Image 1: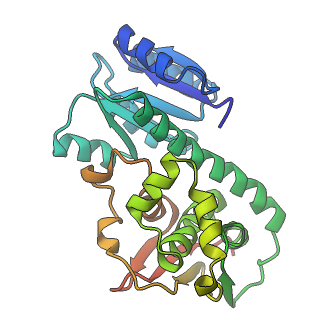
Image 2: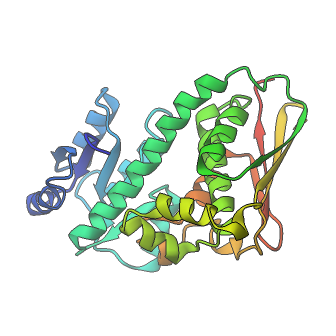
Length: 297
């Protein structure tokens, strides 16, 4: 995401210099600060940032408190935060994850790890912006929907359906982000068999979308669709998403545990569960998920 604005917060000048060196040549616009108070002032006084790289342990206002305040601010809570720290204990990592640091780096880390995690965070920003534009295109199209059946096969169709259905939600942006994550999960994992580790490698090689397109073109995948049923229930929308795959161990992915915190992928279901919907429940096999959200009518 060329030109992305990143706020980097670390009380050690040498660490700021290392991060700036690691990200040099990536096209990012970096703002470097050495304490949490200054970071919050920049965030709350109108400066616009696409992501925050935040040190956990700082004197005064530490990283966890900065993260907590970001997540409690309606305007700031959508900004992805990459937490970086020397604290590697499971409970310490889990605490940051509970507060919403879906991206986590433990010091010392390599340049490639930082770039991969930052790009993953910015990819979420990019998807949110793309969906926001699509939501405006579809606004009003499904306002009279009472019950419906849809099927999608491609990433493009997943984005279109997510944008269309989200126009019925009280919070369209959050609903769209969660829906597209679940629909893409059903396409890539369920229908095409791209698992967590496959995707991590494909993202690292910048080949994920090409691999999805290649597998969609295979004859054995020609008739595989993700089926989505929608029903209005009072002022809520019930959405059921079902793929053609054998299922997966969804229990490992409804929370972002410490073992996956250092990977750039594997956050979609966590975001959907905690940010997008009132409820989210998979069937036992994991090839069907039902979510509910509040509607505007």
